[in-house]
Amino acid sequence: MNAFKRLGDIISSNVNSALDRVENPEKMIDLSIRKLEDAKDKLKSTIAEKKAEKDSLEGNAVERRAEAGRWEARARLALARNNEEMAREAISAKLDAEKKADECESEAKDLGKTILSLSDTLSKTEEKLDEMKAKASSMKARCQSAKARLKANAAIRESESLRWREKIEKINTRIEAWEAEADLSCSASKPSQSFEDMEREEAIDNELRRIKEAANA
Image (cartoon, rainbow, N blue to C red; front, top):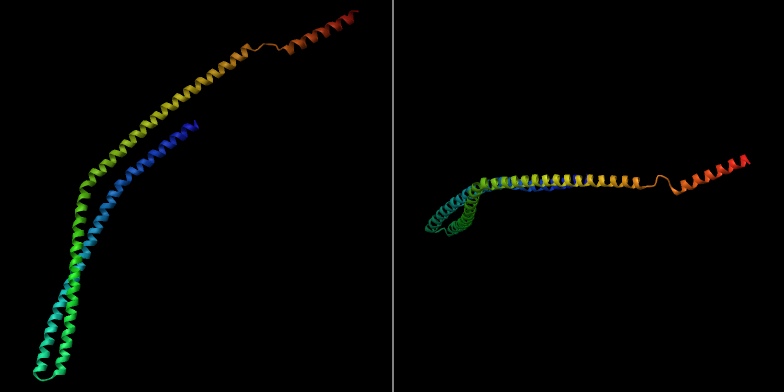
């Protein structure tokens, strides 16, 4: 019986393990959807931040260009009044402003490329999310179907195990009956008196007869 119990435990353990594996995909589907939604939200937030940063850089570039223009006008004014020193200072400030404008425009251009890349990733993420949501119901239905089949197979195996156990028990009962019958047969065929018993009885009879003869002599 212990062997049968161990067999049943092994079958139940394997079935439970299989069912656990069937349940995991459903959880993984929901988790994947949540992760894609989180990724989409983060991408949107990042894109918005990058766009705001790009707009700020472009605005700074425009301001620096305007500043450079003002310094150029001042340089011309200084030259017109024969003040070359002030003209040189104005030109230096103009060059600094133009350099800052160039840097802002370059960074804004790089951010534009980054925004395009992020937007492309966002588009693919949204497509994947829509696809995942569309397939989620059918995928979960497939998981449920697989789990139902496993349960059905487990029930069949358990039923077969019980039938096998009943057959073994019947065979065991029949063997025990045969063994009991064999023991009875051995007892029936065994002599009621052994040779030693007969020899002892004969010795007793002889001794008794001798004692009687001695008494009558």
